[in-house]
Length: 219
Picture 1: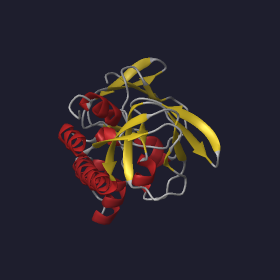
Picture 2: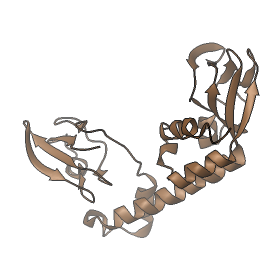
Picture 3: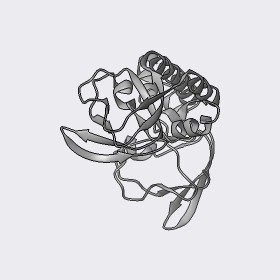
Picture 4: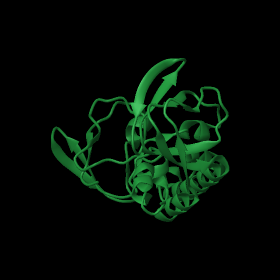
């Protein structure tokens, strides 16, 4: 039943690089809208070049991934399938074939797209609020701010994880949504940042390499 497999589905969503940003309520809505589907062994779930119609989470069994006829990898329980074509509105980039009989939880394209729009709206508003609190960007016009907002993406770091190191080429400015960050120089903490703070902007604005290490102090 759907309730019996809710932990499996939720775990797959939380492990997905994009879908993990869904709220708990949104994940619950996805679970309620999914239906179960069985495909016999040695059958294609979809083929490279197909128009995407479903998003899949593998309940049990194994699937092989082929690109241009060449086997790339085998997926097992909890794997997400068909998400890339849905996210980027393009035809399937690979062929997925069952190794043995497989059971899936599936979500129709129309429901998947609706959920993606929901995520984008939530993300845009969250990023907008964050940007408005940063004096660095206060003088920017609305169009420029909106362009920045659409280019903000979420990253998560575990405790003691290095975000960047001194001397590295700078590519991003970081805004702390939650948690704490230590800025270190020669192994010594020079500053600790928390929710609402930002860092890494100096190297971007001055076009220099990183001047210190940034290390997460919490998850």
